[in-house]
Image (cartoon, rainbow over all chains, first blue to last red; front, side, top):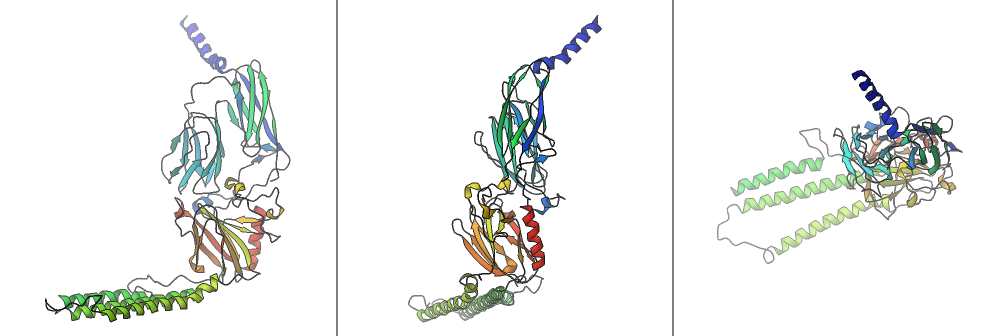
Length: 234
Length: 274
């Protein structure tokens, strides 16, 4: 009798996340059409401790492409119709300064989520998110100091620069939802755990802007949505 | 006591003046001689510097010895002796001192203007290599006109450092800017005159290369220029010597003086990276 009760509880626990978040998935691929601008080689000679960390030339990351016209670093997220999420994620996201570059180049997070900024270099950095909707700040981080802890409360795409190294550049994508995905090297993204409903999916690329598509999820299906951005030669 | 003081003054003055005049500390390796000169105009500046050090050292020594002599002579002065004050007493001596110091400063200026005028009042040769330098917090960037020999127009609103567009070029609409070469190091061919046009992006900065004997400020809103010819292949440091903000200590670039063949290869490499 007791075993049976435990079994029912176990089944209920296993099923509940699916009931709460849904089992639908939206996945797909982000690609470009045309010729993207040639990325420029970054000269780090003034910062030898960073320059020596790179064996191949470092380039700008405004448009990062992969095989078969794949477009990397595109933030795909649910901009309308997302299940209500009042509580912020407890897990922190990490933004690392290494080799005088930002890793990752585009970091997505939910509004209110903790952001940790790490300096892995032997030189001082001064991280400066150029926020317009959120409060703008800039913080100096000498080598060997503990990670900075920050958060952004409002939805915004924030350009991030370093006040010491002009070539360093990245983005914070602060979103209202935790249903987001940043496209990988082969352009793939996936938004799992969606309950049935009508959604608006937005894809954002730092240079090419945004695209949206409407998707309806019924039951626990997986829908494929692809985005194609028009590349600019300059 | 007064006589002892006079001797101490003279000894200290001697100890100070000799290293200044000879440009050298005798009890260590420290030399006051400037680092090796790699420019065609630098010797005039070095000679002027040397003249100034010798002249200033000798004047300092003479003044201190004179002071010592007066202290020595007045050491036994009686308490109620008359004191000559200025104005009134030592009028002639004060005027003589003023004339002497004035002549000295004027002579240094007149003799030194030649070294200065050679760099600043003589324009660069028409066939000098044209390079633009832009200083911004906290890095230097350099621009070469590329194959067409023309610099594309700059648009401050188009400056996008994250995209390595440090000069604000508009290659989408401006054909002349498409072959411009922007670099983080200043490479130049040896024995060829360089005309460096200097632009400040934000605040005041300074272009200083010890070996070139050039130190010129970048002034916001004022495009200045220097010209020079480097005579020795090597890598030299360019540092900002005008306090420009938080990262000033780290604001530097390298001057890379190359043989003509190496320079051509470097230029080709950089052109492919644009």
